[in-house]
Length: 306
Image (tube, rainbow, N blue to C red):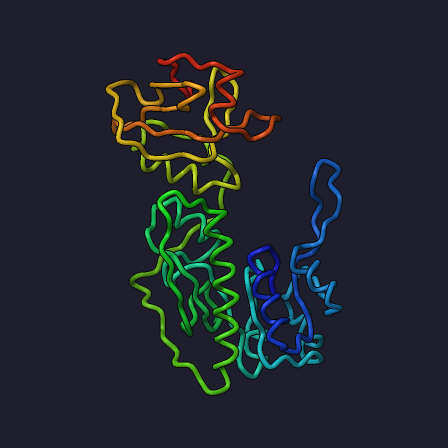
């Protein structure tokens, strides 16, 4: 049971490991693009190329999927970013239970968008967890965990891809060891944190924040919804950024240097200067800040966000 790209890696690994996959449950097709064409989720696309039956129920309420699951008779249900809460009759059905691959080191970062929030919060360490699912949201007993360091300039998209691959390795090991038994570790509720889905409203940069916090916002919202600021009333999306050793005693958001050769440097609320490496005007292509400045000069002293 899974839906987005994060789940594709795990499904690919289960197929490669030779497991008999009796069915795929994924979210219904959704309209996308300007023409709002119905598009299948990434997991469904992969399943169809391997002739695996795909099911896309709108609900699991009132035991609506019980007969189907009993017919499929899975020994274990692997759940990776499915996007639906599973009721008790699903959790209790398989011999080896329902096992979730979660993109954080539980009990921290339960809920939606854990990878993005780890970057937004400036975490130095990230990881993946396999766990038994229970009635709560990411509250079940932990099976296995793997850690990885987060790069100081790593974006949420880059970390997402790495953790998806790590999750595939971890579920492979988990299923391999499951019949012999893996020690269950209850989660420490006193250490639990929950995170919400990302919101476009959080994309607007507040330059009065410290430079490190702005840097984390830019990399944490890449590739979606993408941090943005305004310049002369127009919106400018911000992608790559770097911390610098420079300081400036000016109003937060002030451009202290904007040169096509050296790039765009903006003062933040703590007096530190952040370098912006890539930008995108709304409706235009993403480009290096230097290329943008060649066609759109920004005088030093310009205050962004006004």
